[in-house]
Image 1: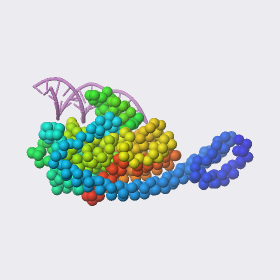
Image 2: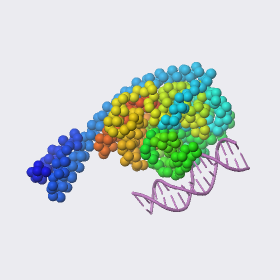
Image 3: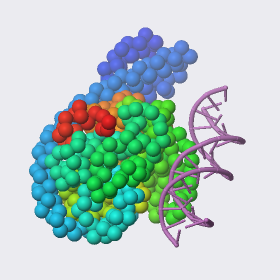
Image 4: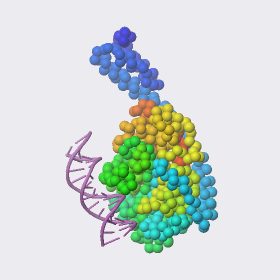
Length: 503
DNA sequence: CGGCTTTGACCGGCGC
DNA sequence: GCGCCGGTCAAAGCCG
C-alpha cells in the first residue's frame, strides 16, 4: 500500500513499459501491488489496462515457448514415424506371409481376449460392410468356422478418408477387391463425399464402389445385397471415458432423436452433422450400461464438406483405424471375423486389446478401446501420465494414452467442450473424414497446433495438455500403429489417389 | 426470431 | 404375418 502511494502515475507508465519484458516470461506478481493500491478511477483504469497488457504479453510469451516445444514434439513425431513406418512395413510383410500361409486352413485364431476385453473398451469401431444381408446367411454358417474368405471380405472397410489399404496388404483379398482400384476405406456408404447429393445413404448404390468391389463373387447377384450392405454403413464408434454429455469432436451436431435401446437403460442420442447443409454424417451417443462414465460415440457416414481443422483429427483417427482394420483383415483372412468380434492376427497384435472388430449384427464394427490401459507391449512413457497428473488434468489413474490425455483435458477444460469449441475435437475431429489429404493424417500435429493457439487464451492449461498429449501420442503404440498404417495406406497408393476415396 | 432440444409417432428391418 | 426394435421424422417447447 505504502509503496503504491509513493508511485506517481508517470512512474507507473514507465513501469508499464518495463513490465512488458518481465511479463513475457510469466505472469508476474507485479499487478498485486497495484491491486492493493487505493487510487482514483483513472489510475484504476490504467492499472487495468496495464494488467491486461501484461497478461497478453505473458500469454504471447507462453505461446512462443509452446510453439517451440511443439516444433520439437513434431520433429520427434516425424522421426518416430519414420522408424515406425519402416517397422510397420516389415510387420505387414510378415503378417502377410503368415496370413497367406494360414489362409487355406484358416481356423479362426480366436481372439478371445479381444472380445472379453470389450467391456472396458473405448471402441473406435469401423463398420465393415462386407457381409451384407445376403452374405449373412452364408456367413453365418461359415462364420462359425471362420473362413478366410469371410474375413477377407469383411476386411473391406470403407473409411471416409479414403485411405486405401496398401496394395501389399490387400494381397489376400485380392479376390474380393480384385485388381480394381485399391479398395478404399470408406466409412460411409454414401457417395455424398463426391457428390453432395444428399440422397438417402441407404440408397446410394454407387456410394461405395469399394464395397461393391469387395463384394465377393460368391455373393452371386449382389445388386440387392450390395445396396443393403451400403445401407449398413461402416461405422466408427469411439468408446471413451467422458464426463460430458457428448464427446467434443470438432464438428457441429444437431440432435434429432433419442431412444432408449434395449439392454441399456441409458438413452441413445442421435446427432446429425450440421457443418454442411446436407452432410450425411451422423453419430450416436450412448453411455455404457456397465460404466456410465464411458461414452460410446458411433460415427456413421462421410462428410461431404471440408472438415474444420478440429475435425480432421477424427478423420485421421478413423482412417488410421480403418487402415489398421484393413491390414488386420488382410492378414487375418484366415481368422473368422464373422460373429467374431475381434480383430485377429496382425491387427490384434498391432493394436492390442484396444481394438476389436465386430461384424456381428447389422453393423460389423472394429473397436478400439481407448479406455483400457495401453497394450502390454505399450511403449507408453511414464512421463505422459506423469505430465497429465502434474498438470492436474487427471486425478485418477487413467492410462496415459492419448485418449486418456484427451479425457483429462476435457475434464479440466469443460469450457472447450461446447459445440462451438473444437478444442479436443482435434483428437476426435468428428465423423469420418470428408477430406483425405495426406497431411490430414497428422491429426496429432493439427491438434497440437491448435492446442498451442488455445494456450494463448487459456494460460498454462493448453500447453501442459499439449505436452501431455504429444507425449501420449508419441508413446502410444496404438496410435502410432494407426497413424503409420493410415499414412502408409495413403502413401502406398499415392496421396492424390487417397484424396477421394470413392468415385 | 432462429436454432436447438425434446419427445411421441411413424417407418422399415428382422426375428419368430 | 405379426410383433419387436432401432432409427428417423416432425411438431412443440426452450433458449440465447
